[in-house]
Length: 132
Image (cartoon, rainbow, N blue to C red; front, side, top):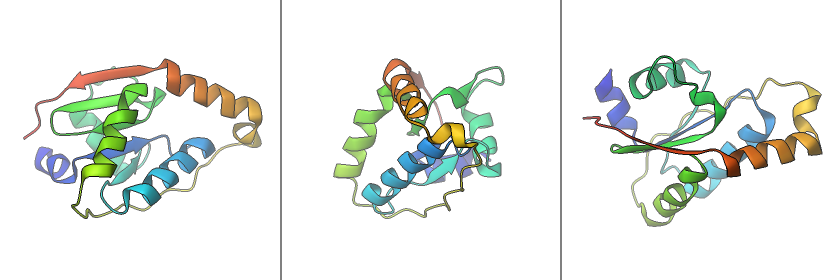
């Protein structure tokens, strides 16, 4: 299983139950041009991958993650490494299907947009990994 995770790296893990997060993932998908697999937090693949990366009691769903072989960058800390990878990578990667978000109308409001944007800017974390 750990080899499966290493084979997918780098990858983006996003909240596939959030409308705005799904839109963000779609934008990353477009700009990355098949360079980065994008996987939902709540998908089967996402759950398996997160179980190999994060401690069982860790709430990884509070932000999106850009995961490389050496680090998992969450939220604000993920923006620069993600952008840098998109700009510099030339390797085409297998992409995963983006899941349609399952959310209520409340997640499509202006308030929700500002709440998620504030969360993105406020939450930031880098976790050292030893995969592969």
